[in-house]
Image (cartoon, rainbow, N blue to C red; front, top):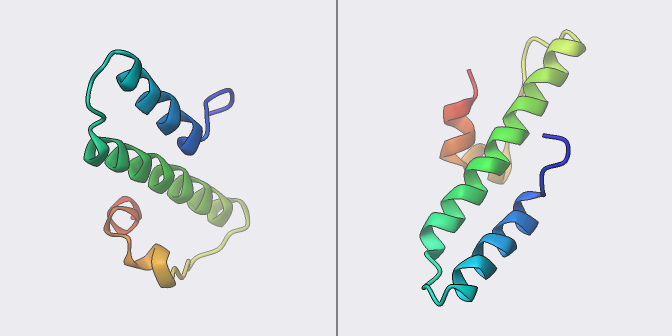
Length: 75
């Protein structure tokens, strides 16, 4: 995703566009979009590193492990 905005920047721009148009900012939709973007990038990078370094087991703990979307994206 080279050239794309980081999720935080993209979320701020998205919210500002809604405000400029005089619309309510749908926070739940925005939060879900940021979560999806972060979970996707985190999962793709972790799995790519496992493949690159021939790691057979990836252990995920703490807040990341508690995130149901991250768990759903992992094979």
